[in-house]
Length: 117
Length: 116
Image (cartoon, rainbow over all chains, first blue to last red; front, side):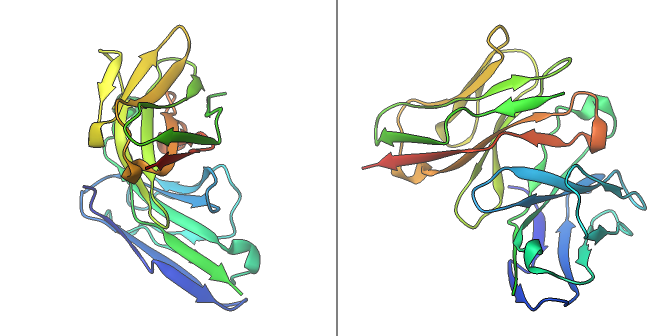
């Protein structure tokens, strides 16, 4: 069982509001990821981090931002939410660095369902 | 470019029958292949992975997967399906060149429905 936690699980907010989705892992993993998933659809990488003070954008363009001040914490922020941001956001983590760790498992949190009205 | 394909959007199986969820992949270099399961309104749970070695990989909940290099496939199987196996299944490949933090590249998912 993976120790990766996301809050809130469900959130309904109004357009223009600022929101932060929290993600924490207790496994000491260096690498963390944020994926976006529309219901029943495939996952798309929006952000990732190699470790503290490392943040990069993924494949899918996103207006969200992330930070990695502590190893265990990788929050995602939307400064001004819009209905197009309605989706599920999945946080994940993995240990190991470099190509030799490609076989390491990526573990996912339970997801945060965001609805912007 | 690396990619994963799950050719069936939905698979229907009767309880007690064997099930197969298909996955094919395209990679440069050694494939690192994974299967995940997602229940409604939940995150992804890791089932199993192929890194190297034995082509038949055993995982959680009685699932197994067979790696076939010549057919570039990694089909998920279970000898006897349960109603509780009904969920969305994702096949994924780890980026062998370690681009973007060694991200997972996902297939589009297959909805498995097991009827009593």
